[in-house]
Length: 422
Image 1: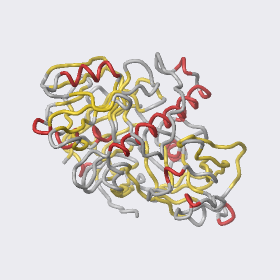
Image 2: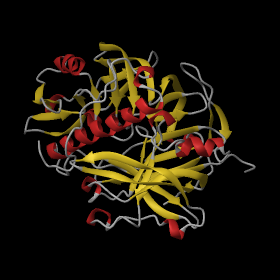
Image 3: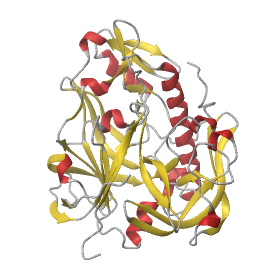
Image 4: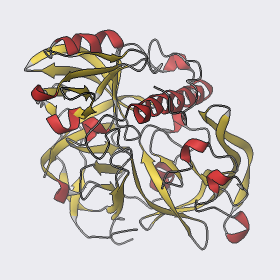
């Protein structure tokens, strides 16, 4: 549901370490948290982690296909490659005021995706949505999806909306073994916490991968750049262009409680101090460069390019660099070579792991680094060795990183920023 609050938020000024100027704007969406890779009794859920790796590989494979079509891979990262399909993701193998709204995000199944509500159509039909900075399209189940996977989902009916318009073409993403999320393309009014984007392209999918069947979310709203999109202009960019959003910024607070997405500014009640902004290196992903990975004040990898992706739990890095990182943790060892997971002694969880972009060290807490016990003595680290095809020296930082900071994404200044959580 939507939780609305008037708060003082920040207008954005870009620099390497920008100090924002207070301004009234924004809306908060309270979140439900994502599915976890950790069981309720603290064990590493290996099957869920394998599914997550395959899901992430397939998601970014689809993204890169869109990038190739939209701008060409040569305009993206050096070494970017469209990898082979990763297999079955469902298997169990190893106004007078600027708009200011906020969406509550609900914790779904202990840390796997962050969902909140939006509505589509006139009158609006509500959906539970995963807000994903690592993709750029909106899809929800269609009333024409009659499979058991769709049976418990909220569904969109074009006949029930006076503002529904069909668009040419079809939408397809492969998530599971011989199964897809696919359907026609429509345009309609999409409303997130009172912020409307009219004639917004999306797909009411008629085929839904079984991997989504047991999940509370109905669909996904991508918050990435248009270059990632199969459908054209993503919701946030449409809303900004139409004037529904005055400040082209959104911010995430991901935590055990009171998680939220803030649209149209940043939520000052969620963080302390100023936001440290860094310019987006390529307007494809929310990607910032010149990063360093630090452990115990020692830099173990430098000049990294980092993609900030709210759509995954895991932090992925190039295998050689991840191997070097774990060598700095006594007692660590490779746990799953196929999926890149490492274990380390549970009795000595590293609490001094951080990324920096030339400013502050933004640390990953011991709690967020540990994604579960592999044995009575060994735990699994949140950093995994995996090539997602995104390019050489590119890291992808999921919510195991984002849960440690307040993260702001500025369309106005094409920048990503971090601040200290309250």
